[in-house]
Length: 389
Image (cartoon, rainbow, N blue to C red; front, side):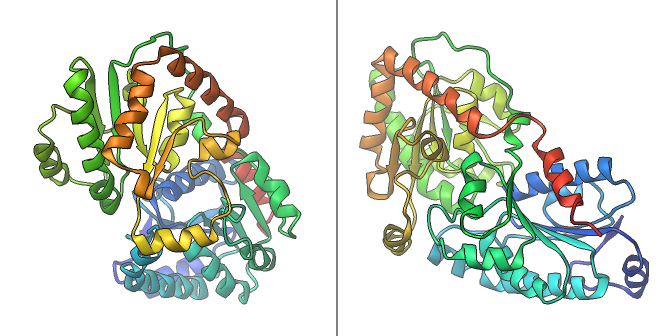
């Protein structure tokens, strides 16, 4: 394995060795969920095309697949408009490194995974090099910025989508697309049927980014403290992000005064034994759906970001399980609605009404049908290899 130095400089040795290799595939991503997708994709590509040389820009999971060349993407992903501004220096530095890497090594194929704010701009630059570019994960153009489809049709040979409805949406707008399904179904098997009709454990899922946790966890803990006054038998759990140190959570938990069991690692075991979740909007809501775990979704961004989003976003719901179902199967508390009082009220609807628990679990089972059968990384690899010259 060749590791690019932290300053992004390639030595003459790496230049001569990599430039002349056949079947070079560059895979680029910039956030945790994309890192997971990229790692699974690399594994499938190696199985199907052992002769390919994999060049990777991503995180620790992609690095652990031992690509022939690796460049850390660092912290270049953010949500919201004001939040993005803080990441701009790292964003532009990585952008330049990738372009230089591409000019030097000349990959035969480039795969850009998720992270559309970064990757669409990168794809526009890469288009001029005449190298085939495939997008893996469609930007949520069905929710906002539909105009991006014009650029996508110009810069991508094909876009591989995770959700069933995205293929037809993109094709109707001139973007060559293929639904390959979501790899999450490989990780989350069909759960054992839940028969418990009471809420004995509630899990807190405040996200993995520092600004999310700081914004969401105190509200979750305040709601938990209010609920615990009348329902002292409920146990509380917190899933901590592996990317954040344990010390990050200490002052937040200490201030709440609540007894909370802290978990890292195997979230499946935690989800199976939980009866209700308070969750940050994101991929974790899909995981809750696949675990048939009733969930209340919460999210909050800066006031300016929220104002702009209300002008641009076209979908009725924020949580992907709700978008796929076309109705609110997970209650959503967004922005001003995300308060301890509202979160307590939503939780009590489940705690005091066993029928709502049962109905929610039943509704969540529909999510799996929109994600495709197991084997998504293999199907994605097959589509990608069609474009490898």
